[in-house]
Amino acid sequence: MSLNGKNSQNERLKQAATAASVALSVLLTVMKLFAAIYTGSLAILSSLIDSLADIFASSITFVAVKVSSLPASYRHRYGFGKAEAISALVQAAFIAGSGVFVLYDGICRLFSPAPLEKMGAGLVVMIISLLATLFLIAFQKYVAKKTKSLAIEADSEHYTVDVATNVAIIVTLLLVSWLGFSWIDTLTACVVAAYLLFNAYKLAAKAISILMDAELGADVRKKVCEIVMALPFSKGIHDLRTRDLGGVYMFEFHLELDGELPLSAAHELTELVEDNLHDEFPNAQIIIHQDPAGHKEERLDNRLVK
Image (cartoon, rainbow, N blue to C red; front, side, top):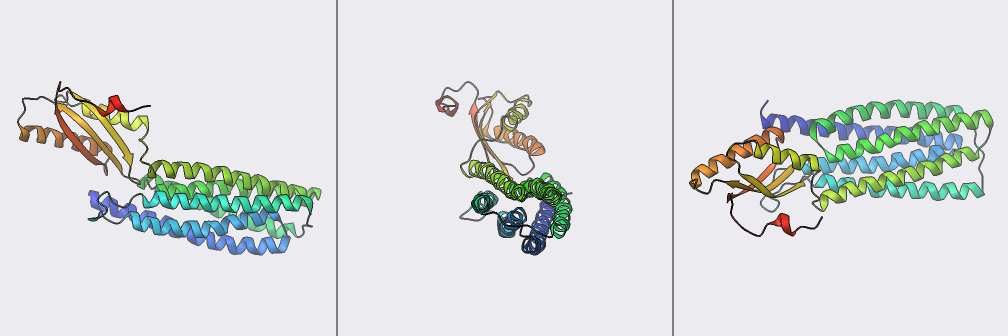
């Protein structure tokens, strides 16, 4: 398959994943609204609020995937890939907001307990919600692995949290039905809220890291150096800089070559380096500055503080 064909397939997969996410969020919100009103459960209400946030967050993800797939323009020559990081940051804000709301309501209910009833209906809704969420996560994980999409990965991570919360709520509803302790419902809601806040922090930290052009992991940097130095004409590599443009890696570095090479030959060898890097990182953007081996200069590597 050609590179353009692969990119087109990836875009279709990402759009299908986001559309499925929005559709599921709407369906689960309606079901949980019914269950929350019917049972009076704060734990189900916490899951309902999370699903409401999912609708907005997944809609933002859908738009972000559309924007990130746009080709580079005159004013945006690096492309629009970071739209996905912005989407992830907005999702983190909504997750945090829903967590704070549920935590506040849970604390209030600890002092003013509310009776719970008709737990059976709530159990059915939460079990259906759990199974549907597991199916969506499996599809999202496949798409995220295939496309390297941060937005899809962020959405998948959030729904993974939903699995844990759904299981906790199902267990809670069973305990309330069997033992009659309504405070367990409130306690579960508070735990779910704290978990939402923790995951919002992790998601925001990752998005901010990309928006601030943090270096890629040590494994990626090591692989780049290994590919470059595996070629017999490479005399050295320095001032390597890497960053994530939103699912697309960018590499900038100085390549040390024989100083006696004519410019045309040095250019051909540099293109060979790029080809080898693209074999490992197909969509990477690569900028290479050629240096004669042994040339003395002030290097970025020596100025940076770890």
